[in-house]
Amino acid sequence: MSPADASPPLPSTASTPSTASTELHRHPVAVEPDWAAPTSQVPLEATVVLPGSKSLTNRYLVLAALASDRSRLRAPLRSRDTLLMAEALRSLGVGIDDVAPEGDAPGGAVPDWVITPPAQLRGDVAVDCGLAGTVMRFLPAVAALADGPVRLDGDPQARVRPMRPVIEALRAIGVEVDDDRGHLPVTVHGRGRVHGGAVTMDASASSQFVSALLLAGARYDEGITVRHEGEPVPSEPHILMTVETLRDAGAIVDDSEPDTWRVEASDINALDVSVEPDLSNAGPFVAAALVAGGTVRVPGWPQHTTQAGDLLREILDTMGADVRLDRTGLSVTGSGELVGIDIDLHDAAELTPTVAALAALASTPTWIRGVAHIRGHETDRLAALTAELGGLGSRVVETEDGLRIAPSRLHGGRFRSYHDHRMATAGAILGLRVPGVHVEDIGTTRKTLPDFVGLWQGMLDSPAPVVTPR
Ligand SMILES: O=C(O)C1=C[C@@H](OP(=O)(O)O)[C@@H](O)[C@H](O)C1
Ligand SMILES: C=C(OP(=O)(O)O)C(=O)O
Image (cartoon, rainbow, N blue to C red):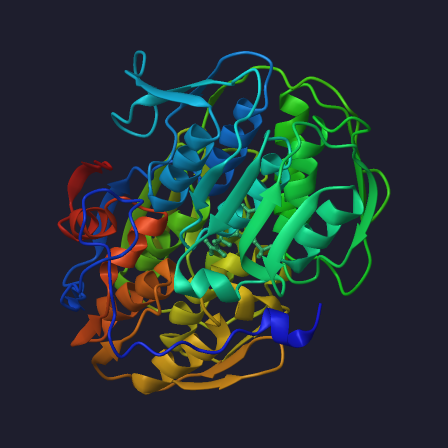
């Protein structure tokens, strides 16, 4: 992959569409006014129930679609990224139905999903990937099993996110794929079955390239072996998440050799699973305890997890919080004082916007390293953070693979979000401390959180017993 593939230009935000529709998965259509980020007046005392993990929900949906029987997904995330995945799978012939949760379900009153795989995935369909990396990377590997062409496209910004390694890996195992120079739109010409075998790819721009092939690979005639060659693969916990969800579904996976993963050809068993809360989405909420002081609790924080967001416990502790995990969940207590951090976020790159926002409020410098590839996330996050933190007066410097942020006095202003949910939530964190921060397109948070504003305001209206998602 050329560096240009991983470095889409910082998009203009002159006219910013956002999601005004209540249908979270629809393409953004209308302009929403900027959101006046609330400042915190008193120390927090809140319990925030976070919806399910995006990464787990979309893996379970894919595995359930390829399974040999009907699955049940409890407390799934219902946000733009997961509704797009569900809709894409439905168009391929998968049944996905809402079912009332049983008993005292986690994640509030979110309906479960019952997923019925078809005998044969259907082709001759078009799939909207939105801006979801998991949809645009995972689905081509699934579409190869359909019985006709599957055309994938997405938001304008999705068309610059790197795809080439997935496309070339599919070609290497005999799948015909049309693409636009390594990007969406992509058409996968499914033939009902895939030979499979061994592929070598450079996954240094995204771990999702590896996950894509592994998730579908058990259903290929010869299974799949993926070898990575290149700079280190980022976000490795996400590959472990893929491996563990596959094993939970009965697949045989060998990950004993570095940078090589083998999934044997086998049936995928039906799943009956509860989705863990999304720990990366918990980031802004637990970060708020550090900024505003007081305590934020997140019930259901798992004791053991493959989610990269679990690293927040260590990060917040280093930055000055008192962090406690017990069987009921996580509790984070801050004094309002916070210090900077020197951290390699290569394994948990999606936390960068949250950590950068905290760093801009810290009393000592921060150095975030190892995240060059987030130039290919929802937007070029290094450029976007440099521009927006800088616009509020932060002394931030973009490096080759990260950010250096020095303590400074911030002022209010417009915080652009570039259609990036984590940029928008970074603006919210800053607004807790800095009066007059106006976040552009707060609705973009619906990519992974159906009601960020409601949860955020509920947290600030503390002491509140429990803030639950709608
Ligand atoms: O597989 C997944 O669910 C994800 C993998 C990571 O992508 P990258 O490897 O591109 O960082 C992560 O940042 C993203 O939010 C979700
Ligand atoms: C990088 C992210 O998302 P995606 O799954 O679209 O890659 C993210 O959520 O931070």
